[in-house]
Image 1 (cartoon, rainbow, N blue to C red):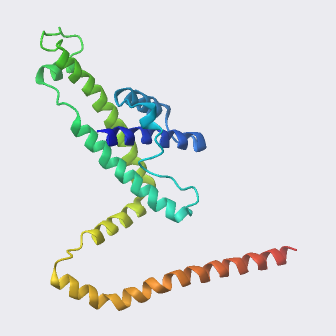
Image 2: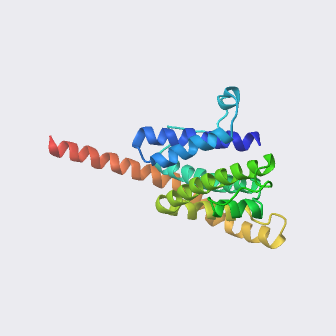
Image 3: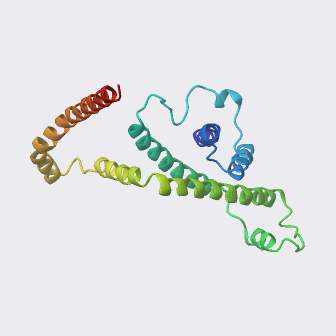
Length: 206
């Protein structure tokens, strides 16, 4: 539970930082996060313990950061889904009462337990709203990163004890090892080429 709460707080802080930099977060989203933080309360000591759920490295290159943020959004999608599953399920009386705001409140719906369920419904709707916003951003801006992460997940799911897999992997290793070794060199060559082109342009302008 503490990890879930800490992650929820991290979501708020991360999204607030994004808002400060580029104002990409709707006001309604900020209000919803603030409301959720009232439900998922933690102490200041827990909040500022120096152990963020998702560490941020500002020195990451943009390509690396895009992949990382795609993974962060995927983790939030799973986390928010898990938080929704932890909420109590509303009883039929509560559902009817919520569906008809003007109806009389029955004794069952006014009990402390059902009051908690009513509050749970509010939290559920807020979590669903935040989940929808995360999913929209992930789908709109991180489609390529999602495909890459799915590919990485496939690599993690390799059947290590399968003899056929072991043999086929060994057979593929020379080709993949060669490719893995050459990629950093190709990247370095492209960087040097861009530097030469930049210098050539500067000399032309001079």
